[in-house]
Length: 204
Image 1 (cartoon, rainbow, N blue to C red):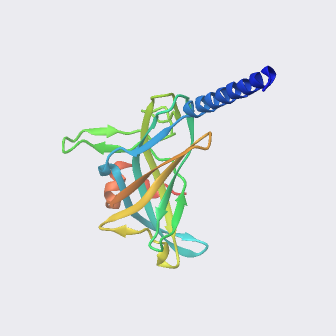
Image 2: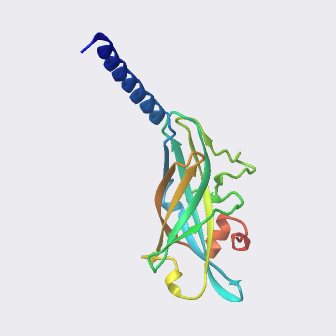
Image 3: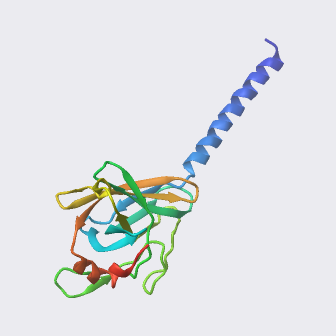
């Protein structure tokens, strides 16, 4: 083996090592979103007044969830979407986009004091609606979805022991996804109205 061949081999090895390091740097610098439910007590669903779709009477449901997101990566990232995938009694998943709502009010125990909560991605009197997370940042907010079904009841939400089953999938602008499973506890429409003003009049 000549000196030139030995030098060529070493050059190829060094180039491979540098390429591996570059790939590792790119991967380690990616944003890493972690999404969680803030507390099981803040995940609700309720039955809305019936609606109409193409002359068909619809069965309507509202879903409120309080979620948090953390960027565990080394790169800032902005959120692009946060959709609810609702499981039906027919074992299908129905995708629902979020709907804007007034900022929810939650009573703190039985104190009579109210906590004003932000809505994810929505600017309001008490929040800026920021959806950009720097490394280590955490944001949280409520998300609201409405589902309407007609015809076969296999499209109804899967409800077991008073809880509806779903998962929220959050996607960032780079196409990375993170999800969290949610168990929605049933509440009355009256209670839902106390949390969000006129929530039964907010529609798709």
